[in-house]
Amino acid sequence: MEDILSDISIKRALNTRVIGRRILYLPVVPSTMLAAKEEAIAGAIEGTVVIAGRQTMGKGRLYRTWLSPPGSLALSILLYPGLDLTASLTVMAAVAAARSIKTITGLEARFKWPNDVLVNGKKVAGILAESGARGDISYAVIGIGVNVNNPIAALGDFALPATNLSREGGKSVNRLALLVNLLTEMDGLYVSGDTKAIYHEWRGKLHTLGKRVSVVSGDSARQGVAESVDENGNLTLRLDDGGLVKFAAGDVTLRPDPSV
Image (cartoon, rainbow, N blue to C red; front, side, top):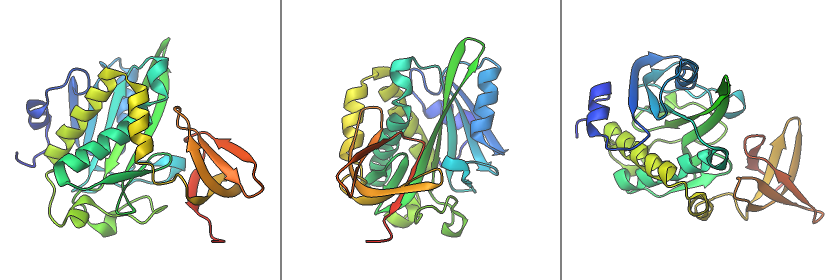
């Protein structure tokens, strides 16, 4: 498979039911998330995927910048999920990303709560889920950014040590093959709607559990051991005094406890 991204090459290689019904490839775009939201407001069909050749104003969690220079993958998927699936979309995308990385590169991926994908303990991909409404129709946009062959010096979002798939695997990675596999995996998970099975697969690869961490929420930080996550992705932290605090995915970031 040639490593050429275009509307035609992507659509020709896809065989999905929902995700990829419409492919919109943009050689340069400020943000695939913003472009996908504009598509939603305009009434685009479910499964529309916006893919950037280069993204100049992409964003990660907590207003961080996620740069997507040539050699990376940056895409956003527009969905109209029911309430039963909305809370699971970030977990779903993480599982799809890990599966596709394993299939295409042979590398094992794990997750740092709530939405980072790691290879060898370094960040290789990030996921951002946002929702909105067009009149009485609710939509969700799932943004996925993967460092594939892009230069290490160009990697964005420096909250974690970052890497790319080509460095970790020791060879260049076919972005078209990775993208097609990622969309295929995401389609299968979304259509199945089996949120319990998806959660268990995600939890089994969660790097954070059992680790001593500092959970930062707003201007305050709490230290303790990441004890468990529930099926909605909420993290329970066991504090040093034995108490428990629950944090919702998307509201916090985790860092190693500097006192350890």
